Each structure stands twice: as structure tokens, then as C-alpha cells.
Length: 108
Image (cartoon, rainbow, N blue to C red; front, side, top):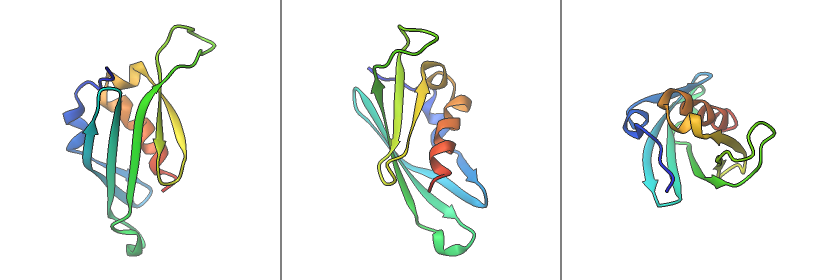
């Protein structure tokens, strides 16, 4: 089962990307994936307010050059198709997990 530790700490905050502020609107959890819905709550120019981004996080079995037995996860923006890899270390700390979220929000 895929688990993000202390996920409640991620739900309450907002993310700032440039001049835009994003907030997690909903998190759906299944046994092998997470789905995040984020909404832009403050945008400059204001025309970008109410934009949404939908991310899906799932396990992706790949071998890395450093550790062949590592579990690697992929988070994909379902709207733009852009994806980033997420390590197990990032799933254990909310502060580190915000990094991949910010990388995907930069393209929104």
C-alpha cells in the first residue's frame, strides 16, 4: 500500500508559485495511488483564479543508478501530462513532498 506520512500537514497549507497561490482542495486515496486536486486561490493577473490541477501519484517500478531495489513513485499532472519522480524519502516528510508538487504547479 502506498502511504504518505503526515498527509494532514499537506492538506492545510497553500503553495506559492510565482505570484499565484494554490491550495489542496481534495485528496482521494486508493490502495495503490493518491489523487490530489489543487485550486488556484490567488492569481496575478486575476484571470487565472479558479484554475485547477489534478495530480495522480502511483508506484512506478524502475531501477535507479544508485539503488536497484528502491521504490520510486511517479506523480503526473493529468491536465498537462507533465510528470515528476518522487522518492520514498519524500513520502516520509511533508516538507520534502511539497517539492514535487511545486515542480508540477510551475507548469500550470
